[in-house]
Image (tube, rainbow, N blue to C red; front, side):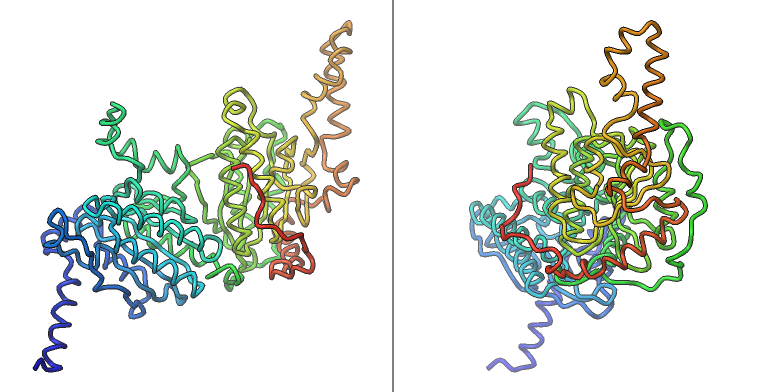
Amino acid sequence: MTTSKELIEEYQRQRQKILQMAPAEVIERRHKGRQWTARERIDYLFDPGTFTEIGMFIRHRTVHFGMDKREIPAEGVVTGYGKVNGRYVVAFAEDFMAMAGTFGEYHGMKETQAIEFAKKMGWPVIGMNDSGGARLQEGMDTLEAYGRLFRAQILASGIVPQLALLMGPCMGGQAYHPIMQDFLIQCKHTGFMGIAGPAFVKTQLGEEIALEELCGWKAHAVKAGQTHMLAEDDKDAIDKAKELLAFLPCNNTEQPPRTETQDDPWRTCPELDTIIPDQATQPYDMHKVIEAIVDDGHFFEMLKHNARSVITGFARFNGRTVGIWANQPAWAAGTIDIDAADKGARFIRFCDLFNIPVVTLCDCPGYMIGSDQEWKGILRHGAKLLFAWADATVPLVSVVLRKSYAGAHYGMLDKGIGADLVFAWPTARVTIVGAETAASVIFAREIKEASNPEEVKAKRIKEYNEIYENPYRAAERGCVDEIIMPSDTRKVINRALDALEEKNKGNRAFNARPWRKYSNINL
């Protein structure tokens, strides 16, 4: 008869075998390549002594192609829960040293169950991706596991925050589950993500391209706008994930955590009174405005390398989390193109899902025009912003710094599309189009037929400018609630957020709408 002592010893032996993960020399090579093991990543993420592993002993059931003889520790993925900065989080970390972290039936089941558990408990999810892709030896079982994972993620979307950390390769069907999470942090030197790798691309299309160019950080953070933040290595990626979590609530029924701050909510920012150039076409850096008005000058930017004419990210006002959507006059005059519209719309919708107020800083001459944008669907993409604003129920505060023209007026949040409060600086120019454009249309015939066309054109531009290119007409019509000194912007925003606090707590009595599943956004 087997004794209890022997059973415990067998348990400890099997557990240690799984925990060992790989030979020391393999782990050492990994460290030299600036990567940690899956368990090292888990250990660094969670507060010491709080992590509970789930599914350590799960094992695949495949017998074909030699799989009956393959031992894959923990099925190539470590899953479990614990505390991160004192709050519960669920996480999974794929183990590239276990059959290249390939995604099989039970690997997928572990990730699916982790997400479903997080949804049930109302805890955020962090996925650490490092996998060679689908485990082809399992055929249909692998294929079906992807579908179950995707469904679990989608059904948890908008209920709990989901963060993806791209720390190694993530190819094929494997690449869809990080891209469907709310935010993606990519390790600059080791993270690769693609629907197909270079070998497959060459076989199918005849295109020769390096992995770094096809699937590296420039492809996703700069060109495609799929990577929200870049990290130098595993430690940096996890540090950024922890910092991001600190801005977010655990789930959609909670308010974001409020922190203590020594930064006076009512302080003025005198430097803002002179930040707008006298020349309307001269640029300035909107980051300087953001850093001046937020708590301690700290701004956590998202998608900073993509669609750089606009800025998105999180900051705090008097300790409360706020999402910021702003134009960047120093890049393409702050115009909104297709990528910028997509960037803003998804950010606004995330904030709305998780009870985060949004503050906009507007200096925008309009949506980008021209055949390139027109043929790619700027109208469809631009409409996403309008859907995002009109659907939003969180506090929405708009500050117009300079230009607020045409479609950008409501794409950057105006009263008509749903702003709760709109403020404008004396330098604001709130009107349908700029004076030069308006004069060229309204007075085209008069200018053409004049004996001195340039003199008449200048006169009409000046006339239109004096009547409309200012914040006072908008204030007269109630489209701007108050014209404020730029230096008062921080305290005005804090007062607005205080006033709107009950709306942010989900008091639907003030915001009743007819029942529907969701809006039919122009995807």
